[in-house]
Length: 348
Image 1: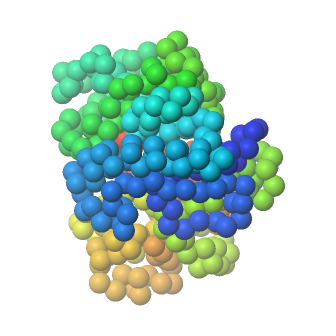
Image 2 (image 1 turned 180 degrees about the vertical axis):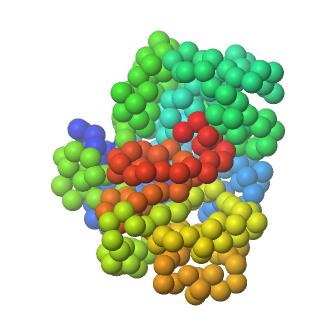
């Protein structure tokens, strides 16, 4: 990520995102290049489903990455090392092809990745035959506390393969990076360090919200969607301290129409202000005239600058999908949280 690159003691000059929809032009120390996922006009939305997207990306991605590495070498900017997302294990094979040192970067918690590792090695049999599991470095976990991929085996088949296959060639990586700080999960980090060269490099949150070591490092430098910055911050500026419920379920989690209606009714009947992030693709699920009927107490936006929002004193509680980035940001901002956790998130 851009945040990880900014925090390195030695500058990194090339970042290879799959899609960059809204970027910060002030990130001048980093050259941004793209590789193809096979859906160059619209990415995942163009594919329409994970079953269509993933096989195409896995087929196209390695050759596209190899072509970019070759191009950079030919133009006098050879790649010295490759940091790749754990979801893309084929990137390690490309690095080996060019003799480049590599680091796999896991953006989820060590606890979640430990569960996936044990499944991948056949050490945790699915479907689960017992109501709880015990894994090294972790407290006993009830089935309901495990990632949904595991607890409800077969519920997300395409993504289940992705999370499990992260470990298919991990022993060949030179380093294993985790987006955590050591004291948060030191027991499981110590266990994992027996097998791999583990480094905890997180949280990859802009420096101005942490140690303020990097001047003017206030945001991630990119957004999946265009945030409504002015609208959010202006609205929050007029609200009392700890008076606003902030509701956001991230960039992927999706509520059904019935769930959306129930949440909308709860917010409408509550006696608190609320800021609700509803992605453009989800807006049609809102009840008729909901935005107009709640305008005196609520603000609905398609996307917002979450770190800036969570750091605002008007926020009293965060209703979250418990994605790991949101979890880390909530820890940083010391917000009170309520969780609605799909997919991998129950463990968080």
